[in-house]
Amino acid sequence: MNRTEIKSQFYNIIDSHKNQVITYANFLNKNSELGFFEFNSSEYIYKILYNLGLKPKKISTTGLEIKFSGINPGPTIAVIAELDGLTVPGHPFYNIQNKAAHACGHHTQSAILLAIIITLCNSNFIRQINGSIKFIFTPAEELIDINNRIALYENNKISFLSGKQDLISLGTFDEVSLAIMTHSAPLNKIYKVSFGGKTNANQVHRATFYGKSSHAGGYPDKGINSSQAAYLSNLSINNKRINFDSNDNVRIHGVYSNDNNSINTVPNKTFYEGKIRVKHFDKLKNITQSIFRSYIGSAKAVGCDLLIEKFPGYHPLIQDSNLINIIKDNALVFYDEKKINHISDDSQSGGSTDMGDISTLMPVVHPLFHSAEGEPHSENFVVTNNELGIFNPAKIIAGSIVDIMTNLHLQKQIIESYKRKYSIQKYLSIQNNEFEKITVKNMK
Image (cartoon, rainbow, N blue to C red; front, side, top):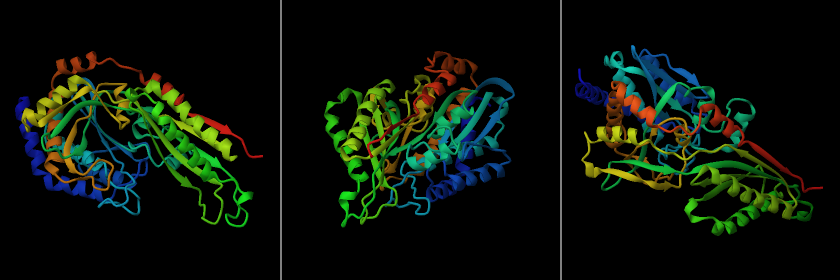
């Protein structure tokens, strides 16, 4: 069969398994879990793959990979899905037990991969390909729940606080030459799919303020209020925002938590989980130092001890133009040119993704499929159109796989035209150097 005939066969197989795939998507949506703890989701997907006669490999805490290899030599491409949800109470599918909801639509990514895997299992396509296809279900894209991730890191369960970073360190991407991923986006009156654009770099840290407990009513003067030090640092940070260059697309935000404090006791331990985002990775250092001075100064002003723990964040996502063109060509099978949005290369999202880290190592593409009500990360974000959010994306990615894996010239063009920023070894060295602890003693 030629490529057009193979794609047509793939579309028919995907259509014939729609009910099955929707069942998978609904289960994952209703049973969302936080990053590195997606045990139920991982086990559910593992069983699906096993029942297809496959032998998935378990990676990191909850990740999975499955590899299809052709009889002809060639590169390995990765197709990626993210397993994790977000803490968004009030979301209609908020999982109270796991404190998570798929308010970013990651469940659709797994459904898309499963649809494509089912298709490959029901065709002879693998015999024709040049190289291998590796499907990767990765944990923990959302850089949240820092206290629990630090505990995993300190117990040597993970090497980094992000799923793809951890998989890079484990060697999952060592043999991979290019990577493809999809993402849900809000429904749009004009566009069905968007290509291009960049994301911010980021850095995450935890500032722990240590005070002294006392009776909040009877002996407040005997205590040192760790919460007040944390709040004062945030006031300092807010007063610095005007000094940041608007061209750097800076975002600074965080959340507080206390260590089992009560209203009748002066707090003696307060965490501030902070995140800094900026356009370029090399701008993080100076902004980080400024923010850390706010923590140090506020701790000194109140008289608290302080521990700042800095962890590696994400690199900007930069997408490959060759891969964008391949995905776009396959999207044109389903959508008129007017329905396809081309985001400018100069357009910079305030958000961040660890897919950006992958883009420093190899060519990647990260199209957005407009299929959800509400805004991302909100209680109203729900993928409501399965054709736009699961099945058309599955067909578009499947068609793109056909184009790439049956065309040695195209493979060579994509790989050789990409300007690699880092080797994996260099990348890991840079990331490992981002770990830092700063201790400040103010209490006598």
